[in-house]
Length: 387
Image (tube, rainbow, N blue to C red; front, side):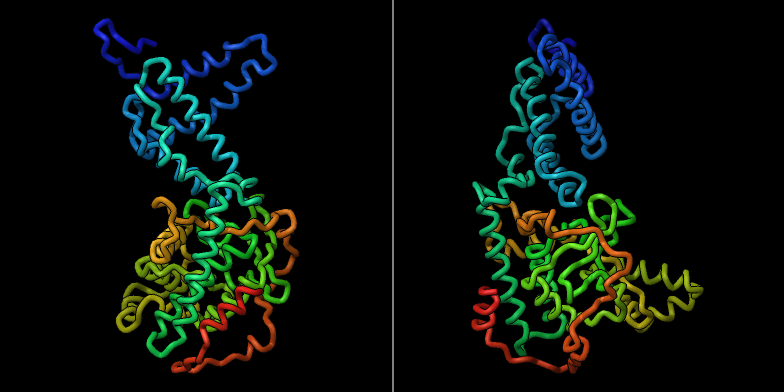
């Protein structure tokens, strides 16, 4: 592979060709060593997928064209896939380390002048390592502090929304945000198990049918692709109950966190009405004097759940409002998650679904449209903080 011409100018090198040369060099670097060739075998699949990702998502196939922004985007994609449960945080960091080592080799070989993967901006987006989260070391200790500050912020906003100054829509929004943060922070559920993953038809988001308040669990589709029950602590159950009373889902297959993207709801409702035998004129007539969500409630059509990306956007906005984004990097669903031990917090689901078992008092709550509870915000915050 020729890198420099006689006049000193750099000859462009494709990522695939550079990967080939790098792997060949690593495979023969220490033929007598105990791990000879092992690194090349393990790195090949990572680097091939990196090259494919570059071409697909950024239309880049040249090493010389690589910039720090591309590596930051790659780190963000690893973080998102970690949120979805495709692999662990430690695996994501290993993949990025392999790419960084490859690019360092490219610098040493004169292919590129500097390594775009060594910037702090790229590495800061990577998911935190599980072991660091468990004991609160370094930057992840800071993430735990940010998570707690975010919780206090959304809790206070939710309690303030009980005042007369807030309409029903704002009250629902704030209770929804409080429940979303609380469930992420105080349950063993991952973002990809609670929210919809557009690329995976099986991951359509948790529903109220999956919740069992008696046992304190949520049924989810685990990383193993089997149904599992994950622990939901009291700090999550209380805001989830409050949110449910105001949401008032008409059916138990209603998502815990429905999307608020009106076009998506309208498209879904039209598709469901069409499947039920309504023709276009009938559907248009139904939409003439109702919104999509009103029709969904009236016809018991569960709307789509919020997507993992949508949940990240909600958290990004809340972090900005609460002032808890570190160096411009907001908390992601994974970084809001608690350090509950997965081995203890989840088990294989039983054959029957929980069917939203709730205490009798919860099932008998009736809430008039103009109901406004009087809440001492400070005392509630103190009580919940001590739970």
